[in-house]
Length: 329
Image (cartoon, rainbow, N blue to C red; front, side, top):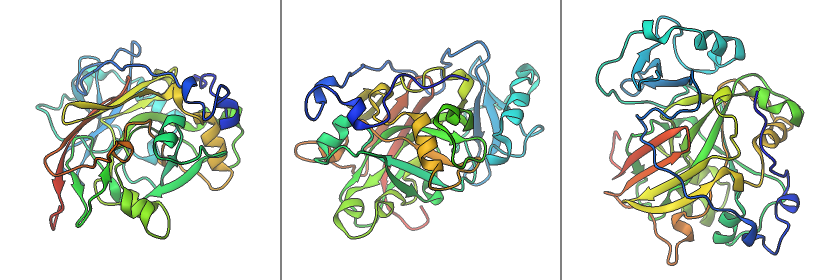
């Protein structure tokens, strides 16, 4: 299994040239790749997905020709029960040409069903901390998004009633594949099942201006669009060197690389497992680079009618229409 690249474990190790280290941050302009276009990560790339109406999704995968293939005869769903290494290995050995093709372009749901936890990492890019006017943390800032925030990659994002500061955040997410408690860093990536795109939508007033914790600004319905698929770890040899980007209304807002993250994925798994048991299907979203609306001068926030397009290299794209809150969604 691939190991993370040479990314230091602490801000003191990661940022070594100048305060606050902004000159050391390397930007990489990402290539655009359509969410339905095959991205060549290997000969037998396995992209797991869930398709169908919300709450009624079926399991599937994307084949090498960009067709959705149904997996219902092999697994009941894509969830923590089937994300272990043995189950994933069995799926990878299927002859995809014999799986039923799903016709048309069905809605895609989040690629993982019923996560027990969605954990977020705050201020994990040095330049994002700077634009937010916050000090770079010495250890990860950890917060939760409730599972009801999870939505499909192209579902509308709903602005909460009365919100004036709903913001965007493109992120790399990873999903736990086996129970993890007190995991050593050099074994940590063995506990990861795969990687996906996440938009960590955030309401800044709820998050930062009231009392309490970040969870209030992170957990509204539709605030965790995930997917379009879960790419297994063997097909992502360098998770700490992936381009990621986000456009609002066709204008590039975020443009960076996971190589700029302060805390590497193996470190995050080990760190988090020292405070709680991570279970198969749990989702960890690793933080966002600079370019969020809160960091604009003056600040800019999402409005009904906006369109967000975002992606992570090799993991696909998302596109969301922004809508006003309405009863019933």
